[in-house]
Image (tube, rainbow, N blue to C red):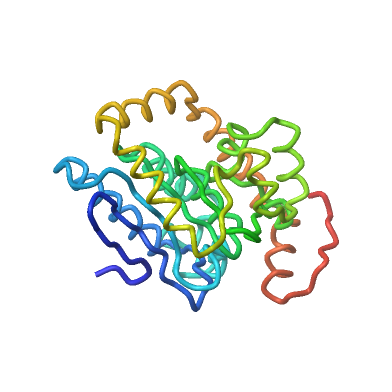
Length: 267
């Protein structure tokens, strides 16, 4: 039984619900494993013609605070104690989970509320559609930790917005509001929080008017036209360099001890 997520199949919708409220739905390895398993279950419903879409949402005050940095930096990391010396296996694992989400047969709709940060936003960007509650705040703050968004965040954001806007949002790591996200094309719709599910169900209803295989093939064709494997490899290469720097070590310490701002060394 999953510990950090809930799943629910109702009518033609398969739901994946982030359910780690005490950690603001911060994503750790176990949670990502559970999401991957849930996608397998969703595929079975697609093959049985019992689901037409996946809706991903979260319990609690926010969609996700991003990566559970503590779990990645401690012995809970399944990549072993020396993972920083060879970062590529971990980056590959994380990228594969979100690529699996991106490439699944069913259209995926992510419902955002509260805030959606870092790895949480990278997961949302791997979905086909994003619907945000008004006043939702979004951010890719990795550069403020001496990193880049390396789990498809850089690649997928660039597919949605122009290069200048992508550089602004990633280089500054600043938080932006749902209304701006809609204007820039990062989210499809902004609605009152109480209307999130209603809007998602309306979208599923519209999608269900089309033939299931036509929808699935449309998704595959567009994804292949926008093929991004090389871009993901470049993200992994850059992150492998950055996470060995003194700046990264200082930033992690600052986050844990809440001793901002960081005095960057540039090395």
